[in-house]
Length: 318
Image 1 (tube, rainbow, N blue to C red):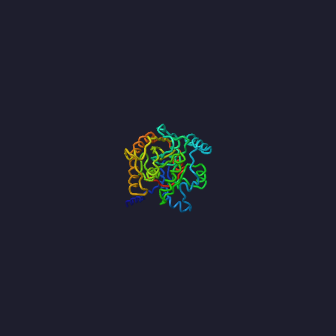
Image 2 (cartoon, rainbow, N blue to C red; image 1 turned 90 degrees about the vertical axis):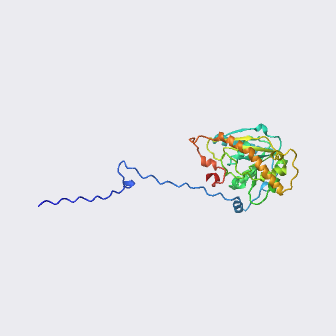
Image 3 (cartoon, rainbow, N blue to C red; image 1 turned 120 degrees about the vertical axis):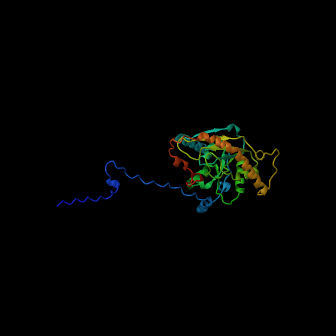
């Protein structure tokens, strides 16, 4: 009888080997991609003020007249800051137009405001005397009690918490600085969340102060402070001094305007638009010099960018 043919074995489909038992030459599975974690949303100034139970602003917080003379302590802190910023961090700031600064008291209005370095960029362009006093954000500056104590001791900041307190206190702060021969500095965007190298929307608080004090106005353009890392380049430019009448293109002196009136608000908006039209092209121009090649190392980028800011998600991070 013929022999029965052998039955072929059934082949089962091969299973992929686990990475721990993979044979030689096998590629391990790629590691799972980590999802980028967004920074927490920024806490509102009103919530921060309510949490600490103290929202004093301006002269009420300072408790003394804003001095225009540079004390020995201020000069030492200014020197130490330069050693850290230009020595340890190797920041570079190119500024021009210092010969345009007027003598005596004036309002300095700066943009684009993009980070904690902006006040230092302003101070780098100004002489030690007369002193500059900033109308600045208390939530961003007072991140700890010791920092608040230090700023109060050194001076230079008149804090703002925002939230319906009104502009009258800030006008009083500006008048006190100007009366003592100092420089009153404002950042009309009111936030650091705007786009790099371009202006964000201007608020009108600075313009109301200008209308009520009628002090000379010095436009100040700056760029390169949105992202900080070792060796970062920044730039600033001082524009020719202006005035309320000059920005409004008036040949005669503007008569007094009723405070809080519709007319005052309309003039404040016109002033903001006119100042933005002057500063915008200059900011874009100096921003080009601050740009580094994409392959340039950005050491300590995140740490330095948030060094003196309360961490939180910014509009430009979206």
